Amino acid sequence: MLSVLRDNIFSLFMQHLPGVSFIKDLAGHYLYANDQWKRLVSSDTAEDRPGGPDGGQFEENDQRVITEAAGIQTVETVQAEDGVHHWIMSEFPIRDEQGEVVLLGGIGLDITRRLRLEEELNIYRERLASLAVELAVAEDRERSRIAGELHDQVGQNLFLAGLKLGSLKISSLGDDDRRVVEEIRHLIGGALQDIRSLTCQLRPPLLAHGGLVAALCWLGEQFREDFGLQVDIFDDQHEKPLSPEVSSTLFQVVRELLLNTAKHASAPRAAISVTTEADSIMVSVEDGGVGFDVSSVSLNCGKSGGFGLFNARQKIEYLGGTLTVQSEPGCGTRTVIRVPLKGEQHGTTHAESGAQ
Image (cartoon, rainbow, N blue to C red):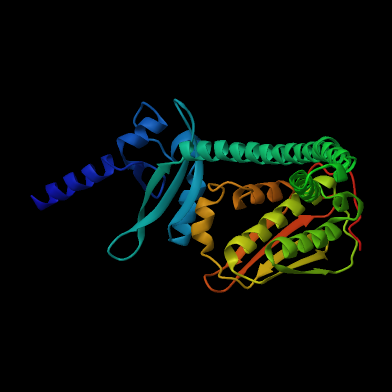
């Protein structure tokens, strides 16, 4: 009774495995194969086939198990009736009471679908990276266009409006009218200053003419004036040949990081370091603020609008670089960006000098 029960339990377990199972003798003859294995190999029974299916495909694995007297795990390609399948196969020795290897056992799981999904995921990642750089180029182009229109159209119109106000004969106006004119002049002057600041943030002239470090120095001054954030900048004084695309991306990423510091870190100071290491440029942004849990924020990055860590990382990675964030609650935040210098980046053709 117990023997029959054991046989039934063995058969039930083997037939309901989410994969294949078999037992061979040391010569490679199948003594047992569950239905999944039989269907995979052939419509005919596999028990009488020496050396396994496909002309002894697994003979080398059998010999390894016998020689090493230990289990092995391999990834195998099996030609089945419905096409090629990829399997994770585990083969192991079965010993007798004296500990001698007398049989070989094997189980396997079909990973064909998983491999196909991984391949599709890799294709998706490549497309995503391509879209990220296209977005970066489009953003840079749009920033340049908006900056140009703000300067050439809105700024010029406001400037002309100020000139026309200046041509008014103030002395002929009443007190109330003169006060209104002065208020309008003040508003126009403020609007012109805002347009200049916004134009520089969108596309700093220094970025093209003075290089990345000069643009970051200007950015630091803006954050000191606008947010009271003291920004210290270190430059190793080495030449930094970067394409306009890379310079613009680095500038925008650093600007977003400083915005996060000014708004959320509760830190009076921040430090930017720009150095070269071998064929790469490294930009780090560090503060001694409240810090945060990196893992929890990374899961939700990009959902709150703005540049976002996700978008920043995608663009930096497309350029062949990396963006890493180190932070803990109460311990401040350090973000390190590494990007290859000119000649190693995707799609870089023009150089700019960042030497100060």
